[in-house]
Length: 186
Image (cartoon, rainbow, N blue to C red; front, side, top):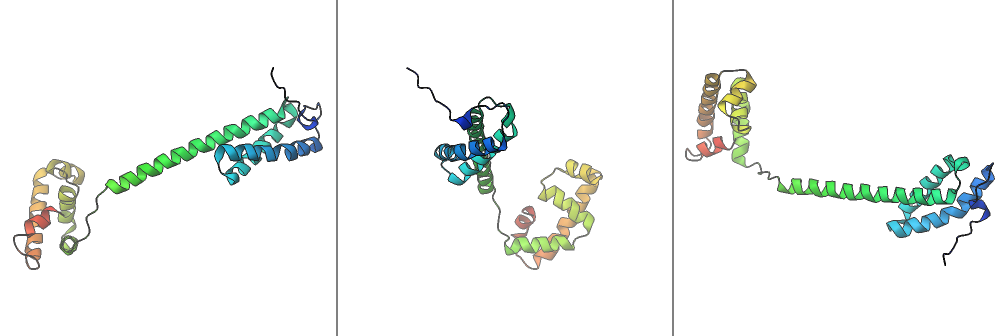
């Protein structure tokens, strides 16, 4: 035997619904929507918001609904499922960001690196640009030449002059044995 729900007067479709009918429907339905959504979502404040949204959507269609309570409950549950989907997507995105942030390794700025960067700033812009692309971005001579609009020989020349200047100025502050490693790490 199937149990049948006997709707109250406010749940029945009225041929010409009045604002009083809608108000009574909302007063009667709202607490039950909030309770159902609260159990489903586990968050009473979100349940309250979604219940209100479901009732607003029901009110917009009030005169065209045969079963406004059914529409309100279905709308509320659809809103709740959408909310949960968004929260899962947000969590996945945050997890991905956290993983990417953890997997990126940032070397601390050691005094040697700071000295190299300072000396790079002292180089002429054409040498600094060639060194930055060639060694900082780890581009090939040909790729660097293409990006700077130069020939590969011009890039080699600028890099050679820039490295020579860096070695000369850095030799005064570091030992000769560590200078080549420092220049490679730029």
